[in-house]
Length: 252
Image (cartoon, rainbow, N blue to C red; front, side, top):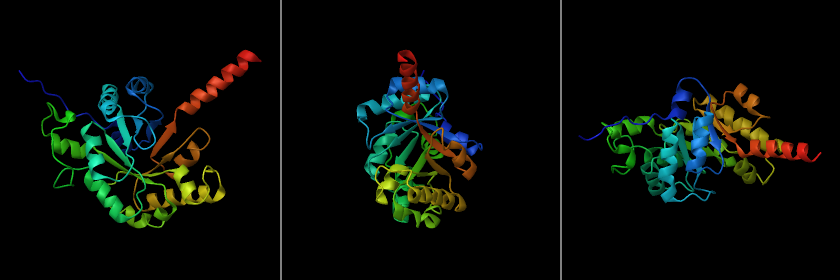
């Protein structure tokens, strides 16, 4: 007898919809690392196709590892491209993070690429997450997340219109590329950059959107007070801090 299964819940989406703050573990994540991160309790693991070394053949195993722990997989593609978004989702990604969303046309293309007709333009095929799932296409559309990266200074002025685009689940403000777009490459702490990041977050929330950004121990309270509902945290920084402290203690 053929086996059936339930479609995996998108934990990141569930946490946010229930009023919590979704937490994404940012780092060089592979399937083994995702097993560990799921045990820690993160809502999602970040998988980087823009700057990272993950291959297509690895992606399905990474997303499976996330599913085993009830953890979402957030995959950043390297450009706004329907074919790449399609392939990413077919490999099992819970959410697609799309770089350099600047215009309403960009946002609409991104949102439509993540959902099947008539809700979008995603190509129809039985991906690995479809096997054994009743009413797969409807459930996929309900669970998938489209995350727009707001990382260009010119995009900030467009946020009042961008937040009106149906199908963008999170507007994620990215500090490093924002700084670069302002002529402050490598200096995310510059006052002008910090002002731009905060303005972007305020405009997203004012427009009714879900704001996300990169956070750490020193600024998380500020972002939570602003109303940010999704944070990415670079877990390697904790390894670095603890490692340096241990080495110092051992050699002092």
